[in-house]
Image 1 (cartoon, rainbow, N blue to C red):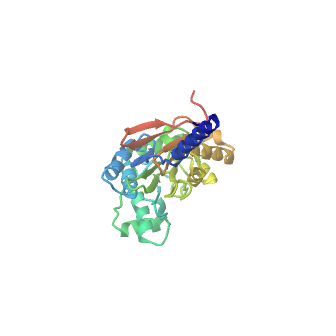
Image 2 (spheres, rainbow, N blue to C red):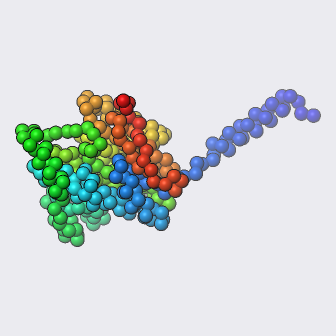
Image 3 (tube, rainbow, N blue to C red):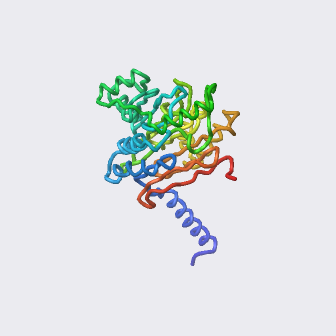
Length: 324
């Protein structure tokens, strides 16, 4: 006959065994998944999903996805149709990063509709990470890209209106969903590999020659295939000061969920930028399990997520400043 003490001991051992077994159980990864910034991320996700749903590589998916936004003249913050700088010229920045840690970037690129593809060429065809200006344009043309006037009649009209209203302005910033200045996209494929892309025409009416966070690996985008990937949107200067996307990934490395990592990185941006109440910055992130998250300073930032379970949908990001 088992004594009461023996029974309690056996029960405790059984419970401990169950807890250990539960601890050893690994969560089922959600793959593939793609996440991108803002409403035009829905169309970008559709393009990326065509690659991912057929077992394609995340790198190919993110390039295809953001090219969708770059080539859409209705998107005023990216590629063809992007709003110009203060002089009336459209200049583009972009970067891309794969699961191997390889990366490529272009900045202050003119007359090329798809800077993300030039960034990939820099990554795959040169020993460099970044090319800029006329050198980047010459490289793009030498590798088969076509020259194109990126200033659409609508963008030219808006620039003319701004110029008339701000004849002596050096720079004009607006914190709203129309001047969010980028599309960032990160994805995980069926094989569990991560990649990311970020592309922009920058802040509308920026000083000629200004470059923000979008082409900077670690600021606008970062990928670590062991941990996760992140991208930023908003005022690039604020993101650069905190090396924002790298920080999000490192916070995930410390055990934080993508959502919490984005929140903590936003708090760091706030700490590094005394004028934080007058700027918008947002982050999106994905981890190795396919979990996603996003967070921002100002209300109004949303992001698009596409996976097999729920399809393609918009998700409003929580914000440090609550919506009124």
